[in-house]
Image (tube, rainbow, N blue to C red; front, side):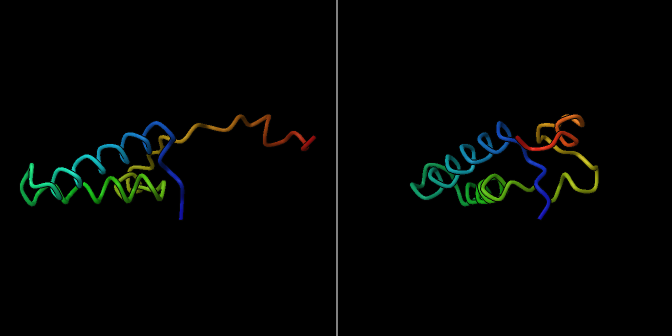
Length: 72
């Protein structure tokens, strides 16, 4: 699976997802809180299907010179 979610994006998704799922589990919000499973899952997997049609990625770009450089 293509990784298209960067570290900051992944962290935010996991925290938001956990917050929503916890609030839904505790009854602080209605059943809509279970939607938090989506950002939680995409954050844990590092891939967001909604980014694919737009070719968007929040992953850090690799330097082209680093890819051509032989490993130490």
